[in-house]
Structure formats: structure tokens, C-alpha cells
Length: 399
Ligand code: FEO
Image (cartoon, rainbow, N blue to C red; front, side):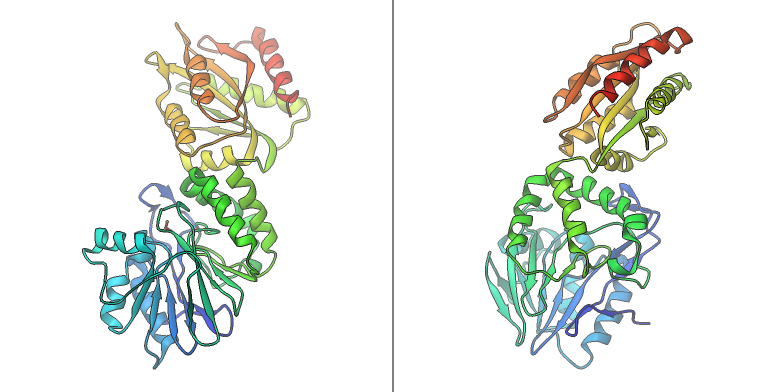
């Protein structure tokens, strides 16, 4: 059965959701599923904006056929060549043999890499500022390099003031009939997944996102149509403000996130004791995570959100406990910046993790590492409460 929704009189969502996939990109758990959005513009000419992942091909084509009806498909705009959106290009060409494909130079280079053809018999190569008139509507093509792939671009329809934003403003989460952000409680139910999606997939490319946001500021945008998650047609300032913060690595919340690794529970106990010491000093909404039991993508999301981070780490084989080391590497890969950091360490005979964690954190931009730290030898005991108090005071002093 088809499942489509009108975004405007002439633009229809023809995407689909996958609630069976366990890991997006074979990395990220998606308990709430994911949607792959595609859109059809019906004007004097018809335009499909992006395709979908192969997993939802059946639903997508049912939707597309329903919306097109007796119309032929004139154009396919490829805003992004990652396979979760471009997988159906070959099928589109087979089903709609007259279709022309619009992309930039890099788009068609990637088509050759993925598909062995750049569809040169039907390609329309566009560059920054080029337009396509479809009748009543004019599509403007805006390059968005490295958001988060080099060929990425966005498309703006000046008639309905719609920005087709590619992965920008996307989020994990299946769409449940309510395809518009104003039809759901986005802040309660979607924001964490939106942040996790952005920070883990686009987080490294803050400068590129900033460049795109500056271009977008010059457009009169009423609707944002991303390739994943809800469509924005109200309160655009809400999501734009989030993107402004995330892409400049500014914390959303003045908050403390404590992340510990613990082999036998002793480092966990010390981390909990610090959380308690902070709480009695009036700090609210403290978050504590066991890095061994929390997916790294959730930790990265929390790291972007909060202003203050505490790492509590056992020494392991003379180095940093491996799962914590992986988290620190991911932080570097995703360009985490502008945090205040405190370190706790544990070691039974030669604790050295704190020094090594500090070195790794100092490789990141604009990080403040507190001088005060706590060293635990095997397990923390009551006489070390004063050490915790000193560390808690130091953290509170910077909040
Ligand atoms: Fe949703 Fe970069 O692909």
C-alpha cells in the first residue's frame, strides 16, 4: 500500500522507514528505526529529489508510482551519493528511461565508482547557483561540500520556499505517520537521536556545516526537507539553533557528564562518589555512564551536549582501558572541542591512565583540563573523601 504525504500542494514525501535494521552504517544502534526520505515535485516537469536505501525499495516505488500517476518522471536530483539515498538510481533509470539525472561533477564521479557508469547519456551537471525551471517552480542548486561527503549539495525551491537539505537536519528514528516535526514532541522524543545522528555522522565537519548555514541564512526558507526524520515547517529557529551550537562545538547544557570504565566496580564506585559530591554541592542533572555498557555514539552525543566531562579510567596493560581509549579516539575523530575536563584514574600497582588521558584530551581544540585529579589505588576508601571534595570543588568552580 502506498504511504505518502503532501509537504506543499506540489511537493509530496515519498520516503519510507526501516524498523528492522539494527545498526545504521553497521555501527550505530537504531532502536527507533530510521526513515529514508525522498520527495516528488509535480509541476509542468516532474522531479524526484533523491532516492532511498535498498531496504525500503518496495515501499518507495509504490509511493513514487502512486504520486506520479500517469506522469512520466523528468528529473532525478541527487543531492547526496551515500548509498542510503542513492541506491535506487539504477532502478529509477530502468523504470523511467527518459529521466535526466541532476548532480554536480563529484556526484557523477561517485556514480562511476559505485555503479560503473556516470549515466552520461542523461546527466545534467550543475554547479553552485545553477537553476532548473520546472514551470511554476525554480530549483536552485547550492553546494554543501563535506556536509558530510564532498559531493553533497542542497536544493532550494523558491516557489514554496522549501530547502531539500540532504543529511542536514536529519535524525535517526522511523517516521510514524507524523512526518512533520510539529506533529511530534521533538524535544522529548527526537532531540537525543537528532544530536546522536549529527554528532556521530556530521560532527567532524562543523566548519562545513557553518558554511552551509551561512548560505541558508541568505534564503527565505519556510520548510526544511531532510533525508532522514521529520520535515520542519514550523519553529525552524529551534533546529537551526541546535545546529549552530553543534557545528561550533558549543555545549547545549552547562552540565556534568561522568564517564567511567570499571573492571570490578571500584572505579565505578569512585565515579558515583564524585557524582554524589557534586550533587550535595547543588549540581543537578548529573549524568553517569559506564562506557562498557553504553554505545559510543550515545557517549559522543552526551559529550557534545554537556559543558563538563569527567573521565574515570583504570590503567590497563600500562595504558588506558581499551574501551575508554576507543572513546577518546572517537572524540578526536569527531573534533570534539571547548570542554572542561576532569580525570580520575585507578591502578593497583602503577596507575598511569590519568597522564595518558590528559595527553589525549590535550590534542583536542580549546579544552580546559583541571589540574586537580584523583588517583585510586585499587579501591577508594573513606580517607579519600577529601580528594573527592577537592575535585568536586574544582569542577563546581568552573560551572
Ligand atoms: Fe544519510 Fe550521508 O547519508
